[in-house]
Length: 465
Image (cartoon, rainbow, N blue to C red; front, side):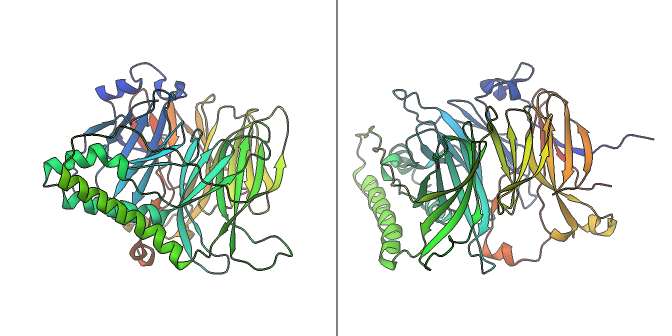
């Protein structure tokens, strides 16, 4: 009987441009700790300390041929040599209207956003310090109503910041409209691209200090949580944050934020930056000044909101290393320095499952089809209820990827994984109101395999049977 293949090959990224990020020797993708990888359903971003490569390997959502299918974009961000600034995090920001940009974090605490063509759209200081991770996800906006919002979470050592997805989307829409309306003026384009650093608006965000139990190696905002007991109803909204690190393997915090911003404050925060940006753009267009201000804006840190510690797990010498969050935020898979994987219930804040013997492992949540309905498969008509949530565990020392059913289910699959490979997952997609109300088939979480030595990209098949 022939052996079943549980993956499907999608394409190959091999090319000369990859030599700029270390390709050409065995294990280059996994052996370099400074190499960052971020996957989108159409593109792959690879970054070292000073260079970003964007490789397009798929068609657009409309299935039309992409003229830039094999085009590689190189981005060299303007980093401070005095402070030895370098690229420390990358993540895609993807919207339903097929708008894709790349968010980049630096070791000095700056959040940069680049277009697919490498143009700098936004630059903003989050907090002085290294940005460890940029997370994108949707969360419930209210515990009592079925409403949701989308967020971008920036993780730094001992600090967590949260940006509203709608604020980023509005800023990008303004930028693309302005860029499109002025693309015919080549001189303006050059001035706009060179001097745009001085006209960036500031995106509103919340900032919390979560260093009560030591600096964190990773963190995530898991969702909304109820207020403390006996607290008088107020205008505060509370989020739960889970952090991992060297001093405390796991710790949790209640993050508070004022949800009753005044109308005047909201108008000022939206209108004034946009007005200033418009005035600055027109002044450049009219005066055509040849003098370029090379001085970067001063880094102004934002005051911290209140973060109340809830619990922590200290188990020296164990250290938390990586954290992966489920789509709903109710489960988190945490790897530690002793080769264990802990499955954390983020609402009850208890460990519900433990795996041992997985050193250097990485985890991703994935949704697999448990049914055998071939008619649905032929027309791609599956709903969310047809899928079961699983955890994919990549054990590089064993050369395998295991698929375990959540929460306490059995191991469903064991798949060989070549040495020098990574498991990746496309970033969360910002959804519009139209897409949320549409009756199209559900798009599940998938796991992709990137073989650095061969350049092959493949996807885990959805069917278990």
